[in-house]
Image 1 (tube, helix red, strand yellow):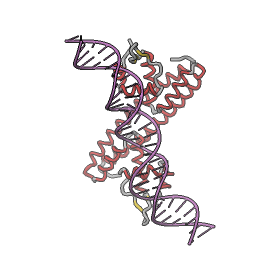
Image 2 (cartoon, protein in one colour):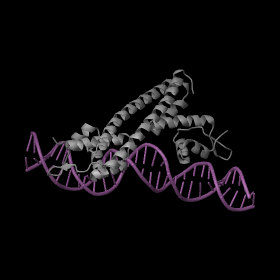
Image 3 (tube, helix red, strand yellow):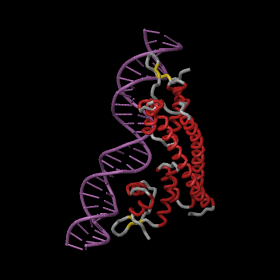
Image 4 (tube, protein in one colour):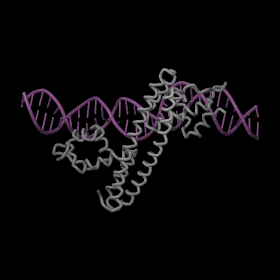
Length: 120
Length: 120
DNA sequence: TCTTGACTTAGAGTTAACACTAAGGTTTAT
DNA sequence: ATAAACCTTAGTGTTAACTCTAAGTCAAGA
């Protein structure tokens, strides 16, 4: 039922160092422990970690994620704030995608030139 | 005709520090100098810089870009190698875009949940 | 029981990519 | 001709995000 840090590491691809680091930085609060102090991740922890990874992979910094997590821990009074934060982040990601498409065109052009054995 | 480092900085949004750093790291070889040793960027330099920025913004590291630049300086015998390198990079960028779309869905879902005033 | 291996915390080390400072030379407008 | 605003190089400092080490605890198998 509950997973050890190694199992979570294998499942997510994050190193055990990173998992401890994220916890220390406040990105993964309330991870339970066994009687002897060993981390045991619940299903909820894993789902939460999924969201954290999603935000991280889309370019949110650890500091920004911590801010979001803190809003979450403040209960339902911050629901609107959290939604706005995510909407803003979503717009950033969309912009980033558009930017990437623009750069892809440039790379394609360069590849074309090289395929024709010309410098450009 | 030729631009000073400050003009290039304003045009590209890169700081003068970064421009010198990129040059030192081998990303922008052959930038000319005035008699007194001041950098003067040609049109060709600016175009080259455009490609460097494109690669950088799409996630290529400075080390990787340097490798690419070194291939360029080895002449036409490396045309195929350069093309392959860019094709591979292009594929990486395309994968990254797909990944971003996947994450966008997840963020959208979360925004939906928050809009309905539910934790999820 | 003893060893092996996985876990713990605290803290130090690493890397990439800048950002800045110091000490000094150059250019330009008044 | 001198002050202000540029520029130069060499080298140091900073930041984020890990990555690892040390010293010790704990659980399971031979």
